[in-house]
Each structure stands twice: as C-alpha cells, then as structure tokens.
Image 1 (cartoon, helix red, strand yellow):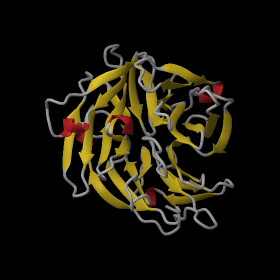
Image 2 (cartoon, one colour; image 1 turned 90 degrees about the horizontal axis):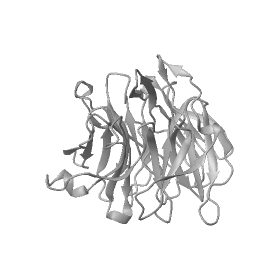
Image 3 (cartoon, one colour; image 1 turned 30 degrees about the horizontal axis):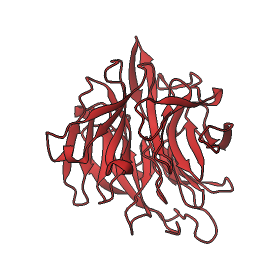
Image 4 (cartoon, helix red, strand yellow; image 1 turned 60 degrees about the vertical axis):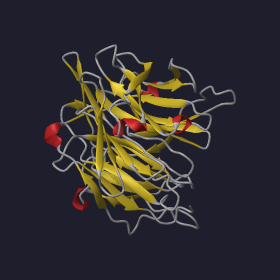
Length: 340
C-alpha cells in the first residue's frame, strides 16, 4: 500500500504483480522493518514489539493488501482477492463492504479527508468498467444502501497501487506496470500521468515465478512524492514543483525489494522489505536497522501506516502475510521518539 501520509502519519502497501495468459494476479511479499534514528525527537524502534489486532482467513480470499485509518481509530484493510474492505474497530468488531468490481483486485486505499473520511480505493481489473478508483462511503459499512461507486477510470493495463494525497487534496497513484505516477486533481474525474520515468518501470525480476512490481508504495512528504520500485530495490523521490508539475526523479534510498513505507516527522523511513520478509527503519543519514523478521512473526506484510488519531500517532499498523504465509493479519507496533 500504501494509504497516505497525513500530518505526522505515514503509511502504505506493496503488491507483487504478474500477468499470466492475459490475466493479472497479485502477490505481495512485504516485510516491515524499522531502523532507529539517533538524536532528539527521532524514531526509535529498538524495543518495539508486535501485537496482533486482527486475523484473516486466506481460504476466503482475505489477503490484506493495504490499510487506512479513520479519525475514530477504526482501521480499514483492503482484502485484495476477496474484493472487500474490512473495518476493524478498536474493540475488535468488524464490518465488511464488497466492491462491485467483478473479480478486480482491491489494492491501495486511502481516507479522503475532503469527503468526510470516505475511502478511495484503487482497483486493478481486466474489465474496463471496473478498473480505476472507487469511493466507498463510510456509511457503507453500516448501511447497505450506501454503495461504492467509481470516481475515475484507469486503463485495464494499469496496476494502481500505493496512493496518497498532497496538502491541496490532489491524489497521487503509483502504477506498478506502466512505470508512472498518476495524479487525480481535486474535484476532477480524469487522472493524468503526472510523472513517468524508466526508474519506475519493472525490470522483469521475479520471485517465486511472479514478476516484481515497479512503482509500488507511495507517500507525499514535505513537498515531494516518494515511491518504491520493488524490482530495482529503490525508493525514489519526485519533487512537486510550484504550480504542481513533477520535478526530476532521484533515488532516495536503496533497500532490498521495498514495498510500502512510512515516513516519520524527522524524515526517517519505516520500510517493508517484500522478498526478504523484513521491516526496517532507515535514518535520515541512511543507517538501516532491522526491526522485525520472520522470526518475529512478520511474513510479507503489505502496508504500513501510522495512526492519525490524537494521542496514538506513535502506533504503526502493518498488514502481514498478505499473499504468502499462513497467518494473514493486521499487526501494530508502537514507535518511540517520533516527537508527536
């Protein structure tokens, strides 16, 4: 995923993608690893522990791909193969919404503050009527009359993945197959390619016979759009120029098979390493520290997001065992020293 970053929050999502016989399927191997940062008001994950918030049933397609967090603390997880969103309340209760997308994959999800916290969802589909960005009203989790609806179409050749808003309400979408970042301007229903670069393109590298994605996780932080390219093991930065155009693409970090990542207020990154099954923290100086591995119960998590809830901004949520592994789940770990 990759949910977006709002204020002191950061999030996100990863998907491993392969197109076989003209059909697209997704596999995500994401691991979250957090590196401690030395200094005052810097992130310190050295003593972090994992807590299972919710477990999912892989046999019913409940593969946790991405997540968003609402202002009341509910965590919404996209279950990609099931074509569903699940709302997990702080008390553990759950509500589901199924998207009417005919087998499309529900991938990135982000809370749209400009629309009362309704959820914008990226859907990959071979059906032209389904592929694109969908809006799921929060009321849909309680009222069957409040139905999801598509707000923007995308090509069926696209694999929309991580998403995030900028301060003006423009939505940026990483495209894992087309080597591009889309932008949906606030109030528009027509996405445009905001930035394209060879650095976003998948290389054809694979894991377990599945092609690794190009542009994948995505965050907006301090006037730049950041995206991971899982296949090249890079996190890339694109400045937002005055007027909104994209600046030159540069390499911010080189991390093994990064999926989604979160960005702390000090600029340090919490990166889900897809294939290595790790979650790492990268300090502003580039120092990498492993937080969690398979030995800690982490297995290809697919998204990471800090809570935007007042008093809970140190809580980092991780979707775990998204496409591989036997225990798909939502995990949480507290991160000290965020200065929030």
